[in-house]
Length: 458
Picture 1 (cartoon, rainbow, N blue to C red):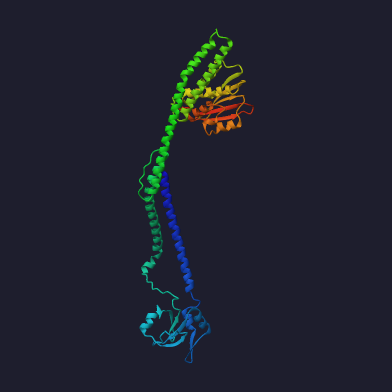
Picture 2: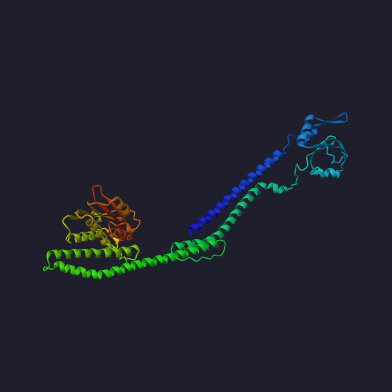
Protein backbone atom coordinates (compact mmCIF):
# COMPACT_ATOMS: atom_id res chain seq x y z
CA UNK A 1 0.00 0.00 0.00
CA UNK A 2 2.97 2.34 0.47
CA UNK A 3 3.59 2.20 -3.26
CA UNK A 4 -0.06 3.11 -3.92
CA UNK A 5 0.19 6.14 -1.62
CA UNK A 6 3.38 7.10 -3.39
CA UNK A 7 1.60 6.89 -6.75
CA UNK A 8 -1.33 8.97 -5.43
CA UNK A 9 0.93 11.69 -3.98
CA UNK A 10 2.90 11.90 -7.22
CA UNK A 11 -0.34 12.01 -9.20
CA UNK A 12 -1.68 14.95 -7.16
CA UNK A 13 1.67 16.75 -7.25
CA UNK A 14 1.88 16.27 -11.01
CA UNK A 15 -1.65 17.64 -11.43
CA UNK A 16 -0.76 20.69 -9.34
CA UNK A 17 2.37 21.31 -11.39
CA UNK A 18 0.38 20.92 -14.62
CA UNK A 19 -2.24 23.40 -13.35
CA UNK A 20 0.45 25.95 -12.48
CA UNK A 21 2.13 25.47 -15.85
CA UNK A 22 -1.22 25.93 -17.65
CA UNK A 23 -1.90 29.12 -15.69
CA UNK A 24 1.52 30.48 -16.58
CA UNK A 25 1.03 29.56 -20.26
CA UNK A 26 -2.42 31.16 -20.34
CA UNK A 27 -1.13 34.30 -18.66
CA UNK A 28 1.74 34.49 -21.13
CA UNK A 29 -0.61 33.99 -24.09
CA UNK A 30 -3.01 36.65 -22.75
CA UNK A 31 -0.15 39.11 -22.32
CA UNK A 32 1.14 38.35 -25.81
CA UNK A 33 -2.35 38.78 -27.25
CA UNK A 34 -2.84 42.13 -25.52
CA UNK A 35 0.55 43.39 -26.66
CA UNK A 36 -0.07 42.22 -30.23
CA UNK A 37 -3.56 43.76 -30.27
CA UNK A 38 -2.14 47.02 -28.99
CA UNK A 39 0.43 47.01 -31.76
CA UNK A 40 -2.27 46.41 -34.37
CA UNK A 41 -4.56 49.06 -32.90
CA UNK A 42 -1.77 51.53 -32.41
CA UNK A 43 -1.74 54.16 -35.10
CA UNK A 44 1.21 56.16 -36.13
CA UNK A 45 -0.81 59.32 -35.72
CA UNK A 46 -3.82 59.94 -33.50
CA UNK A 47 -7.22 61.14 -34.72
CA UNK A 48 -6.57 64.54 -33.18
CA UNK A 49 -3.33 64.92 -35.13
CA UNK A 50 -5.07 63.96 -38.33
CA UNK A 51 -7.91 66.36 -37.56
CA UNK A 52 -5.43 69.15 -37.11
CA UNK A 53 -4.23 68.46 -40.67
CA UNK A 54 -7.56 69.71 -42.06
CA UNK A 55 -7.39 73.48 -42.38
CA UNK A 56 -9.68 76.11 -43.87
CA UNK A 57 -8.50 78.98 -46.00
CA UNK A 58 -10.75 81.42 -47.82
CA UNK A 59 -13.73 79.16 -47.19
CA UNK A 60 -11.99 76.12 -48.72
CA UNK A 61 -10.90 73.12 -46.68
CA UNK A 62 -7.47 71.81 -47.48
CA UNK A 63 -6.02 68.52 -46.27
CA UNK A 64 -2.26 68.31 -46.09
CA UNK A 65 -0.71 65.75 -48.36
CA UNK A 66 0.90 63.98 -45.43
CA UNK A 67 -2.42 63.63 -43.57
CA UNK A 68 -4.11 62.51 -46.76
CA UNK A 69 -1.62 59.72 -47.21
CA UNK A 70 -2.02 58.66 -43.57
CA UNK A 71 -5.81 58.55 -43.92
CA UNK A 72 -5.52 56.33 -46.98
CA UNK A 73 -3.01 54.08 -45.24
CA UNK A 74 -4.70 53.72 -41.83
CA UNK A 75 -8.36 54.32 -42.64
CA UNK A 76 -10.65 54.41 -45.65
CA UNK A 77 -12.43 57.71 -45.62
CA UNK A 78 -12.94 60.96 -43.63
CA UNK A 79 -15.53 63.72 -43.34
CA UNK A 80 -16.25 66.86 -41.40
CA UNK A 81 -19.73 67.51 -39.97
CA UNK A 82 -20.89 70.99 -39.23
CA UNK A 83 -22.64 71.80 -36.00
CA UNK A 84 -26.01 71.39 -37.74
CA UNK A 85 -25.16 67.85 -38.91
CA UNK A 86 -24.27 68.51 -42.57
CA UNK A 87 -21.20 67.09 -44.27
CA UNK A 88 -19.12 70.14 -45.17
CA UNK A 89 -15.97 68.31 -46.24
CA UNK A 90 -15.14 64.70 -47.11
CA UNK A 91 -12.37 62.49 -48.43
CA UNK A 92 -13.10 59.15 -50.18
CA UNK A 93 -16.58 59.17 -48.67
CA UNK A 94 -18.48 55.95 -49.62
CA UNK A 95 -21.76 56.39 -51.44
CA UNK A 96 -23.83 54.67 -48.72
CA UNK A 97 -22.74 57.15 -46.06
CA UNK A 98 -25.42 59.88 -45.51
CA UNK A 99 -24.56 63.53 -45.90
CA UNK A 100 -26.75 64.82 -43.09
CA UNK A 101 -27.12 63.63 -39.49
CA UNK A 102 -29.27 64.41 -36.55
CA UNK A 103 -28.01 64.67 -33.00
CA UNK A 104 -29.23 61.15 -32.26
CA UNK A 105 -27.42 59.84 -35.37
CA UNK A 106 -24.16 61.40 -34.24
CA UNK A 107 -24.64 60.07 -30.70
CA UNK A 108 -25.21 56.60 -32.16
CA UNK A 109 -22.20 56.25 -34.45
CA UNK A 110 -19.57 58.08 -32.42
CA UNK A 111 -19.02 55.03 -30.19
CA UNK A 112 -19.92 52.26 -32.59
CA UNK A 113 -20.38 52.00 -36.32
CA UNK A 114 -21.71 54.15 -39.15
CA UNK A 115 -23.42 51.86 -41.68
CA UNK A 116 -21.09 49.10 -40.43
CA UNK A 117 -18.02 51.29 -40.89
CA UNK A 118 -15.98 51.57 -37.70
CA UNK A 119 -15.49 55.26 -37.03
CA UNK A 120 -13.38 57.53 -34.86
CA UNK A 121 -14.32 61.12 -34.15
CA UNK A 122 -12.58 64.23 -32.91
CA UNK A 123 -13.71 67.72 -32.25
CA UNK A 124 -12.71 70.18 -35.02
CA UNK A 125 -12.96 73.98 -34.82
CA UNK A 126 -15.65 73.81 -37.53
CA UNK A 127 -17.53 70.77 -36.30
CA UNK A 128 -16.90 67.05 -35.80
CA UNK A 129 -14.06 65.35 -37.65
CA UNK A 130 -14.95 61.71 -38.50
CA UNK A 131 -12.57 59.00 -39.67
CA UNK A 132 -14.04 55.81 -41.11
CA UNK A 133 -12.32 52.46 -41.53
CA UNK A 134 -13.07 49.51 -43.76
CA UNK A 135 -16.00 47.32 -42.88
CA UNK A 136 -15.20 44.31 -40.61
CA UNK A 137 -11.75 45.73 -39.85
CA UNK A 138 -12.40 46.59 -36.17
CA UNK A 139 -14.47 44.87 -33.49
CA UNK A 140 -15.88 47.23 -30.90
CA UNK A 141 -17.29 46.22 -27.55
CA UNK A 142 -18.29 48.42 -24.69
CA UNK A 143 -16.81 47.28 -21.39
CA UNK A 144 -17.89 48.90 -18.15
CA UNK A 145 -16.40 47.87 -14.83
CA UNK A 146 -17.23 49.36 -11.42
CA UNK A 147 -14.43 51.48 -10.08
CA UNK A 148 -14.42 49.50 -6.83
CA UNK A 149 -13.61 46.35 -8.77
CA UNK A 150 -10.77 48.03 -10.62
CA UNK A 151 -9.41 49.40 -7.36
CA UNK A 152 -9.21 45.84 -5.99
CA UNK A 153 -7.88 44.25 -9.20
CA UNK A 154 -4.42 43.75 -7.70
CA UNK A 155 -6.04 41.68 -4.93
CA UNK A 156 -8.64 39.85 -7.00
CA UNK A 157 -6.36 38.79 -9.81
CA UNK A 158 -3.85 36.81 -7.64
CA UNK A 159 -6.76 35.49 -5.58
CA UNK A 160 -8.43 34.09 -8.70
CA UNK A 161 -5.18 32.47 -9.78
CA UNK A 162 -4.74 30.87 -6.33
CA UNK A 163 -8.34 29.64 -6.33
CA UNK A 164 -7.77 28.11 -9.76
CA UNK A 165 -4.68 26.30 -8.48
CA UNK A 166 -6.46 25.06 -5.36
CA UNK A 167 -9.41 23.88 -7.44
CA UNK A 168 -7.04 22.00 -9.78
CA UNK A 169 -5.33 20.27 -6.84
CA UNK A 170 -8.66 19.34 -5.22
CA UNK A 171 -9.96 17.93 -8.49
CA UNK A 172 -6.72 15.99 -8.97
CA UNK A 173 -7.01 14.68 -5.42
CA UNK A 174 -10.62 13.65 -6.03
CA UNK A 175 -9.80 11.79 -9.23
CA UNK A 176 -6.66 10.39 -7.61
CA UNK A 177 -8.69 8.97 -4.72
CA UNK A 178 -11.06 7.34 -7.18
CA UNK A 179 -8.10 5.89 -9.04
CA UNK A 180 -6.55 4.79 -5.74
CA UNK A 181 -9.76 2.98 -4.74
CA UNK A 182 -9.81 1.24 -8.11
CA UNK A 183 -6.15 0.23 -7.99
CA UNK A 184 -6.08 -0.80 -4.31
CA UNK A 185 -7.73 -4.21 -4.79
CA UNK A 186 -5.56 -4.83 -7.86
CA UNK A 187 -2.42 -4.11 -5.85
CA UNK A 188 -3.64 -6.38 -3.06
CA UNK A 189 -4.35 -9.06 -5.64
CA UNK A 190 -0.85 -8.81 -7.09
CA UNK A 191 0.63 -9.06 -3.57
CA UNK A 192 -1.48 -12.14 -2.89
CA UNK A 193 -0.42 -13.61 -6.20
CA UNK A 194 3.24 -13.06 -5.25
CA UNK A 195 2.52 -14.96 -2.02
CA UNK A 196 1.06 -17.80 -4.11
CA UNK A 197 -2.47 -17.18 -2.84
CA UNK A 198 -5.47 -17.56 -5.13
CA UNK A 199 -6.87 -14.18 -6.23
CA UNK A 200 -10.53 -13.54 -7.07
CA UNK A 201 -11.10 -9.83 -7.79
CA UNK A 202 -14.33 -8.13 -8.81
CA UNK A 203 -14.39 -7.59 -12.57
CA UNK A 204 -16.79 -4.66 -12.45
CA UNK A 205 -15.78 -1.04 -13.03
CA UNK A 206 -13.24 0.72 -15.18
CA UNK A 207 -10.42 -1.72 -14.38
CA UNK A 208 -12.60 -4.80 -14.74
CA UNK A 209 -10.60 -6.17 -17.69
CA UNK A 210 -7.36 -5.82 -15.76
CA UNK A 211 -8.91 -7.54 -12.73
CA UNK A 212 -10.13 -10.37 -14.94
CA UNK A 213 -6.61 -10.78 -16.31
CA UNK A 214 -5.17 -10.97 -12.79
CA UNK A 215 -7.80 -13.53 -11.79
CA UNK A 216 -6.98 -15.64 -14.82
CA UNK A 217 -3.23 -15.42 -14.21
CA UNK A 218 -3.66 -16.25 -10.52
CA UNK A 219 -5.77 -19.29 -11.33
CA UNK A 220 -3.20 -20.48 -13.84
CA UNK A 221 -0.30 -19.96 -11.42
CA UNK A 222 -2.19 -21.74 -8.64
CA UNK A 223 -2.84 -24.68 -10.92
CA UNK A 224 0.82 -24.80 -11.98
CA UNK A 225 1.96 -24.51 -8.35
CA UNK A 226 -0.28 -27.41 -7.37
CA UNK A 227 1.06 -29.48 -10.27
CA UNK A 228 4.67 -28.69 -9.32
CA UNK A 229 4.06 -29.55 -5.67
CA UNK A 230 2.38 -32.78 -6.69
CA UNK A 231 5.30 -33.68 -8.94
CA UNK A 232 7.92 -32.74 -6.32
CA UNK A 233 6.10 -34.67 -3.61
CA UNK A 234 5.81 -37.68 -5.89
CA UNK A 235 9.51 -37.51 -6.76
CA UNK A 236 10.61 -37.16 -3.14
CA UNK A 237 8.26 -39.90 -1.98
CA UNK A 238 9.47 -42.17 -4.77
CA UNK A 239 13.14 -41.56 -3.90
CA UNK A 240 12.45 -42.11 -0.19
CA UNK A 241 10.58 -45.34 -0.97
CA UNK A 242 13.30 -46.67 -3.26
CA UNK A 243 15.96 -45.78 -0.71
CA UNK A 244 14.07 -47.64 2.00
CA UNK A 245 13.52 -50.68 -0.23
CA UNK A 246 17.19 -50.81 -1.24
CA UNK A 247 18.54 -50.60 2.32
CA UNK A 248 17.10 -53.96 3.45
CA UNK A 249 18.61 -56.22 0.73
CA UNK A 250 21.75 -54.08 0.79
CA UNK A 251 22.17 -54.73 4.52
CA UNK A 252 21.92 -58.48 3.84
CA UNK A 253 24.56 -58.22 1.09
CA UNK A 254 26.85 -56.24 3.36
CA UNK A 255 26.32 -58.66 6.25
CA UNK A 256 26.99 -61.81 4.25
CA UNK A 257 29.95 -60.30 2.38
CA UNK A 258 31.45 -59.24 5.70
CA UNK A 259 31.07 -62.77 7.03
CA UNK A 260 32.68 -64.20 3.90
CA UNK A 261 35.48 -61.64 4.13
CA UNK A 262 36.26 -62.76 7.70
CA UNK A 263 35.83 -66.54 7.04
CA UNK A 264 39.30 -68.15 7.54
CA UNK A 265 38.20 -71.31 5.70
CA UNK A 266 37.87 -69.40 2.37
CA UNK A 267 40.83 -68.86 0.10
CA UNK A 268 42.42 -65.41 0.23
CA UNK A 269 41.24 -64.52 -3.27
CA UNK A 270 37.60 -65.28 -2.35
CA UNK A 271 37.91 -63.27 0.87
CA UNK A 272 39.28 -60.28 -1.11
CA UNK A 273 36.35 -60.57 -3.54
CA UNK A 274 33.96 -60.57 -0.60
CA UNK A 275 35.70 -57.43 0.72
CA UNK A 276 35.17 -55.70 -2.65
CA UNK A 277 31.46 -56.62 -2.50
CA UNK A 278 31.19 -55.19 1.04
CA UNK A 279 32.94 -51.91 0.15
CA UNK A 280 30.89 -51.40 -3.01
CA UNK A 281 27.72 -52.15 -1.09
CA UNK A 282 28.68 -49.55 1.52
CA UNK A 283 29.26 -47.08 -1.30
CA UNK A 284 25.82 -47.84 -2.77
CA UNK A 285 24.31 -47.33 0.68
CA UNK A 286 26.03 -43.95 1.00
CA UNK A 287 24.88 -42.91 -2.47
CA UNK A 288 21.30 -43.88 -1.71
CA UNK A 289 21.43 -41.96 1.53
CA UNK A 290 22.90 -38.90 -0.24
CA UNK A 291 20.25 -39.07 -2.96
CA UNK A 292 17.47 -39.19 -0.38
CA UNK A 293 18.95 -36.31 1.63
CA UNK A 294 19.59 -34.17 -1.46
CA UNK A 295 16.00 -34.65 -2.60
CA UNK A 296 14.60 -33.60 0.77
CA UNK A 297 16.89 -30.54 0.96
CA UNK A 298 16.02 -29.51 -2.59
CA UNK A 299 12.30 -29.38 -1.81
CA UNK A 300 12.61 -28.13 1.80
CA UNK A 301 11.29 -31.41 3.19
CA UNK A 302 14.24 -32.16 5.46
CA UNK A 303 13.33 -31.33 9.09
CA UNK A 304 15.95 -29.21 10.85
CA UNK A 305 16.72 -29.73 14.52
CA UNK A 306 17.84 -26.19 15.33
CA UNK A 307 20.30 -25.92 18.20
CA UNK A 308 23.45 -24.04 19.15
CA UNK A 309 26.32 -26.10 17.74
CA UNK A 310 29.94 -25.74 18.85
CA UNK A 311 31.98 -26.11 15.67
CA UNK A 312 35.42 -26.82 17.17
CA UNK A 313 34.41 -30.07 18.95
CA UNK A 314 32.42 -31.10 15.88
CA UNK A 315 35.48 -30.76 13.62
CA UNK A 316 37.67 -32.74 16.03
CA UNK A 317 35.14 -35.57 16.20
CA UNK A 318 34.80 -35.84 12.40
CA UNK A 319 38.59 -35.78 11.90
CA UNK A 320 39.04 -38.43 14.60
CA UNK A 321 36.42 -40.63 12.92
CA UNK A 322 38.36 -40.54 9.65
CA UNK A 323 41.72 -41.17 11.30
CA UNK A 324 40.31 -44.06 13.35
CA UNK A 325 38.56 -45.67 10.38
CA UNK A 326 41.74 -47.10 8.91
CA UNK A 327 42.62 -44.12 6.73
CA UNK A 328 45.66 -44.78 4.57
CA UNK A 329 48.98 -43.26 5.60
CA UNK A 330 49.01 -41.38 2.28
CA UNK A 331 46.38 -39.06 3.76
CA UNK A 332 46.72 -36.64 6.64
CA UNK A 333 44.03 -34.58 8.32
CA UNK A 334 45.17 -31.47 10.17
CA UNK A 335 42.87 -29.14 12.11
CA UNK A 336 43.64 -25.46 12.77
CA UNK A 337 41.28 -23.46 14.94
CA UNK A 338 41.96 -19.80 15.64
CA UNK A 339 41.98 -18.59 19.23
CA UNK A 340 38.70 -16.65 18.97
CA UNK A 341 36.97 -19.58 17.25
CA UNK A 342 37.60 -22.13 20.00
CA UNK A 343 34.12 -21.52 21.44
CA UNK A 344 32.42 -20.44 18.21
CA UNK A 345 28.75 -21.40 18.10
CA UNK A 346 26.38 -21.50 15.15
CA UNK A 347 22.67 -22.15 15.07
CA UNK A 348 21.74 -25.24 13.10
CA UNK A 349 21.28 -28.97 12.84
CA UNK A 350 24.38 -30.63 14.32
CA UNK A 351 23.92 -33.84 12.36
CA UNK A 352 23.65 -32.01 9.03
CA UNK A 353 26.67 -29.83 9.82
CA UNK A 354 28.65 -32.95 10.73
CA UNK A 355 27.55 -34.43 7.40
CA UNK A 356 28.85 -31.34 5.64
CA UNK A 357 32.37 -31.62 7.07
CA UNK A 358 32.34 -35.37 6.48
CA UNK A 359 31.41 -34.90 2.81
CA UNK A 360 34.18 -32.33 2.24
CA UNK A 361 36.89 -34.52 3.75
CA UNK A 362 35.53 -37.59 1.94
CA UNK A 363 35.50 -35.62 -1.32
CA UNK A 364 39.23 -34.84 -0.96
CA UNK A 365 40.00 -38.50 -0.26
CA UNK A 366 37.82 -39.84 -3.08
CA UNK A 367 39.23 -37.57 -5.80
CA UNK A 368 42.88 -37.92 -4.74
CA UNK A 369 43.46 -41.69 -4.77
CA UNK A 370 47.23 -41.24 -4.50
CA UNK A 371 46.90 -39.42 -1.21
CA UNK A 372 46.89 -35.76 -0.11
CA UNK A 373 47.23 -33.54 2.92
CA UNK A 374 43.86 -32.32 4.15
CA UNK A 375 43.66 -29.19 6.27
CA UNK A 376 40.53 -28.13 8.15
CA UNK A 377 40.53 -24.52 9.36
CA UNK A 378 38.02 -22.70 11.55
CA UNK A 379 38.10 -18.92 11.99
CA UNK A 380 35.68 -16.46 13.45
CA UNK A 381 34.95 -13.10 11.86
CA UNK A 382 32.50 -10.31 12.50
CA UNK A 383 29.15 -12.06 12.84
CA UNK A 384 30.12 -15.26 11.04
CA UNK A 385 32.42 -18.27 11.09
CA UNK A 386 34.46 -19.46 8.15
CA UNK A 387 35.12 -23.17 7.93
CA UNK A 388 37.45 -24.31 5.18
CA UNK A 389 38.60 -27.73 4.01
CA UNK A 390 41.71 -27.63 1.80
CA UNK A 391 43.92 -30.23 0.17
CA UNK A 392 47.01 -30.30 -2.03
CA UNK A 393 45.48 -32.71 -4.52
CA UNK A 394 44.33 -32.36 -8.12
CA UNK A 395 41.94 -29.47 -7.51
CA UNK A 396 39.00 -28.52 -9.71
CA UNK A 397 38.84 -27.92 -13.44
CA UNK A 398 37.70 -24.45 -14.52
CA UNK A 399 34.39 -25.84 -15.79
CA UNK A 400 33.86 -27.60 -12.49
CA UNK A 401 34.59 -24.39 -10.56
CA UNK A 402 32.06 -22.49 -12.66
CA UNK A 403 29.44 -25.14 -12.01
CA UNK A 404 30.21 -25.24 -8.31
CA UNK A 405 30.21 -21.47 -7.71
CA UNK A 406 27.41 -20.68 -10.14
CA UNK A 407 25.27 -23.82 -10.27
CA UNK A 408 22.44 -23.88 -12.80
CA UNK A 409 21.16 -27.12 -11.42
CA UNK A 410 22.34 -29.79 -9.04
CA UNK A 411 22.60 -32.21 -11.97
CA UNK A 412 25.70 -30.39 -13.30
CA UNK A 413 28.02 -31.83 -10.61
CA UNK A 414 28.69 -35.09 -12.41
CA UNK A 415 32.31 -35.50 -11.35
CA UNK A 416 31.73 -34.83 -7.67
CA UNK A 417 28.45 -36.71 -7.23
CA UNK A 418 25.96 -35.53 -4.68
CA UNK A 419 28.47 -34.82 -1.91
CA UNK A 420 29.17 -31.19 -2.78
CA UNK A 421 25.56 -30.63 -3.79
CA UNK A 422 24.50 -31.69 -0.31
CA UNK A 423 27.14 -29.42 1.22
CA UNK A 424 25.83 -26.42 -0.65
CA UNK A 425 22.21 -27.25 0.17
CA UNK A 426 22.91 -27.71 3.87
CA UNK A 427 24.84 -24.43 4.13
CA UNK A 428 22.10 -22.61 2.21
CA UNK A 429 19.52 -24.06 4.61
CA UNK A 430 21.59 -22.61 7.47
CA UNK A 431 21.61 -19.15 5.79
CA UNK A 432 25.28 -19.50 4.91
CA UNK A 433 27.30 -19.37 1.70
CA UNK A 434 29.86 -21.61 0.03
CA UNK A 435 32.94 -20.76 -2.00
CA UNK A 436 34.99 -23.16 -4.14
CA UNK A 437 38.42 -22.24 -5.49
CA UNK A 438 41.78 -23.72 -6.46
CA UNK A 439 44.96 -22.91 -4.54
CA UNK A 440 47.95 -21.32 -6.32
CA UNK A 441 50.31 -23.96 -4.93
CA UNK A 442 48.00 -26.78 -6.09
CA UNK A 443 44.94 -28.39 -4.68
CA UNK A 444 41.70 -26.72 -3.77
CA UNK A 445 39.82 -25.23 -0.85
CA UNK A 446 36.16 -25.08 -0.02
CA UNK A 447 35.10 -22.31 2.37
CA UNK A 448 31.80 -22.32 4.25
CA UNK A 449 30.50 -19.10 5.83
CA UNK A 450 27.97 -19.56 8.61
CA UNK A 451 26.38 -16.86 10.80
CA UNK A 452 27.20 -17.20 14.48
CA UNK A 453 24.34 -18.04 16.80
CA UNK A 454 22.70 -15.53 19.12
CA UNK A 455 24.20 -17.41 22.05
CA UNK A 456 27.67 -16.76 20.66
CA UNK A 457 26.91 -13.09 20.02
CA UNK A 458 25.66 -12.64 23.58
